[in-house]
Amino acid sequence: MDSTSSQLIILLIVLALVQLLALWFFIRQRYELPMRQLVRLTKQLAGGQRPKSYYVDGPPWVEQLSRYLEDVGARLDDFYRQQQEEDFNLNVLLANMVEGVMVVDQKHIVRLVNDELLKLFDLKQSPLGRTVLESLREARVEMLVRETILGGEARQQEVTLESTALAMRHFGISAVPIRTKKGAVGGAVVVFHDITRIKQLEVMRSEFVANVSHELRTPLAIFRGYLETLLDNPELSREESQKMLETMNRHSNRLNTLVEDLLILTRFEAKQVEVEFSTIRVEAFFRQLIHDWEKRKDFGSETIELQMPGDLSPLEVDALRFEQVILNLLENAVAYSNPPRRIILSAAVDGKQMELRVTDNGIGIPPADLPHIFERFYRVDKGRSRISGGTGLGLSIVKHIIHSHHGTVHAESELGKGTTIVIRLPVRQE
Image 1 (tube, rainbow, N blue to C red):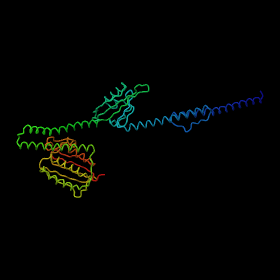
Image 2 (image 1 turned 60 degrees about the horizontal axis):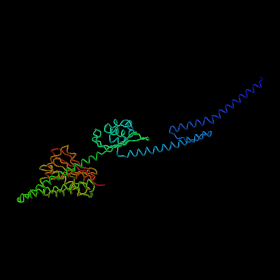
Image 3 (image 1 turned 90 degrees about the vertical axis):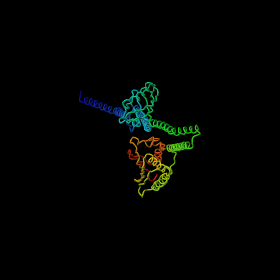
């Protein structure tokens, strides 16, 4: 083979290699790069990222795949947006519910709770991923969840929990099964409604009715007894009849006072009392009140003293209600003191507040009774208050009047040495 032929063969081989190389670059440009772009788009979608553009330059089938990916991306956007809206609505709903809510699966594992449930049970750690029994440590709640899931029916139950964290709380619990698309029970939604206040009000109502019945029974029994005596014995002397009538009159007055106090207290608790504020000079107001007190027929040996600075600021109060407060406190001080009775009325201004004190040198109040003296019908000394004609509602009325003035009232006492009722009122009502 001559050199010319050899050169021709070599030239043909080089041309073939160049063509193959050109073909390889063409195939890579036409197929490999678009495929890499498609892989990159797919990875971005799988990772939750949104590509800026879905366009891929390539053969028609590559462009068709890119359009499919763009449709998938749009559907994912709609799905994520809908999911976020549902999550937001669910979170808003749960956050604004006054009931505690817990969602559990078929194995009683807690999957969702709201903040109110954490507060109701004073949970320091998240219960998510733990069983109901592990989270709440209440077997009755666990049993209710178990019965709901096994029976597939909604259940309700009232439970009183006495654990240390809850300190005697009453709950109305409703459990509703969660069903899958095939109808199987996949868990339950448990709602806890705190009915502690309702139970307390029921107890208070029962006690109130019992107390009113007890207070009415005594004067009515006396009326009935004396009336029967007068009817059965018309020959009684005038003196004996007069004594009976005086006793009946005294108990009639006490019964009338009880009814009036009940009406006043009921109106305050129903917020039906309108408070009309006016400005008073406290010292002059107290001096007039003491003067009127000393004119009473039942005025005894008590001494009432005023202790207050001469430059005391005027006070905005409902004068009629404020007088009722001080008179109730004076009556209590007299009823629970032994002669010689000494009562001190004092006042001082502390910033925007005025502090008023009614102090007696009476028998005092035991520490165990002190937190309860402003409750309706609560008496420290039952016998003494009834003998003095008290209804057991005076301090409760005082509390409501002071609260209607945006103030506070509490008692300070030392057994055997006396009691001080402390009232704090805003100098000016806003």
